[in-house]
Length: 396
View 1 (cartoon, rainbow, N blue to C red):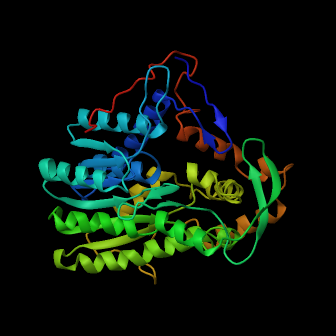
View 2 (view 1 turned 120 degrees about the horizontal axis):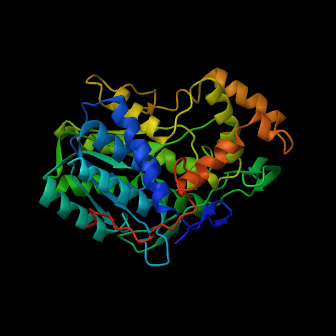
């Protein structure tokens, strides 16, 4: 079938298999070009199908020749019905990995559930014995708690008072004012339950209990801080509370791994276009301006560049891992440079519907958005028929 993008707000309802495969191939080629990494050899990636999780899996496999198991929750393809982008990404990755002689298997299901945890433990036990890196990169708006059965839904709200500021409709380029009402205590608690560190700790506890963590095993989860421009709705809002909990959980997990010589880290990453960030008011405008500044300064990175730098220059240097005063790895360091943020702040004050395409990189934002779904990828012919039914080679 011929697959075209069908967009509803910040979501694209279709995905393109060849565009997604080309995206994955480009990321693989980047890591291979950068050379080998003396990194992990047996890796579990939770949230492995898109964004930082996918880039972590690619970096592990094609940088360090690691065997990888990916866990994700994606819609399979069927006749006349394209799969989700993560489905096509995973199919492309596992095909390339197996062609390169690398072990690559995956489990499609709810990573919050005890059932998927057990299935993953059984697979590690049968095929790998132990893992030496666990990447926690789950991004979900909803979690069914495996012990209580309670359904928790995360919300994006400020805390304490209504938030008002500029935002942009990245499809039309229209800059407008947005106001978001403050969260209540239930909103905060539910967001922490979904996006905080409890499930990360549950995974590590389950792996350790079954002796599936290798000596010296490392686990890393991903976070974001961002500038003062976005902090009221992000870092000082409900999501920020969840990230605070995630970051605190790293210390708890590190304590539990001491007997193995292991360690848990949180990596604070750069602002990038993702399905999640596209849904956050203010963030698309901030990213459009940030991209403009960072590209002009030669500092821009996408997810694969970020994860390659994290693995190559931070986690696996052979020396002590550099962290900030709160124990976090900072690969948002280029984004948060004083000169970068000063320029973005100046552009923010100037930004309006008429000038955004000139002072910001809205075109780059839109391209990255459509790339998430396999569209507008260079070198792909979108006029031709493609087979929408694609199998994931290593699906268990």
